[in-house]
Image (cartoon, rainbow, N blue to C red; front, side):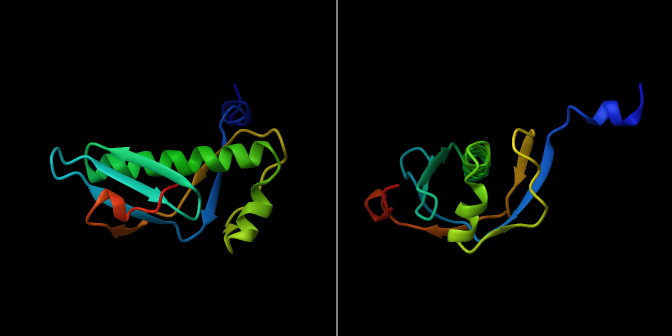
Length: 117
């Protein structure tokens, strides 16, 4: 088996350059972390801040994959003033997205202070 055939099945890594900000609140009763990202109209949750950040990254990656699949990623990034640091592969290619981490976190005191996504 040659080297090219080993890597053919691997998704192309696309690095996104963006400033992604989440508004986050920690539930004082059980410590769970909930957050919304108004710019992307997304929400995520986790049992801890680390789990929240993993869920937020996965959620953003799924959004970008959907946008790529439907041919809307470039225009979406442009509307937000963001860009791909790497060339986008052709339509139909398998991709995965690397988004900047850590996200900008804006702590909130109460659930009511979160912008609803």
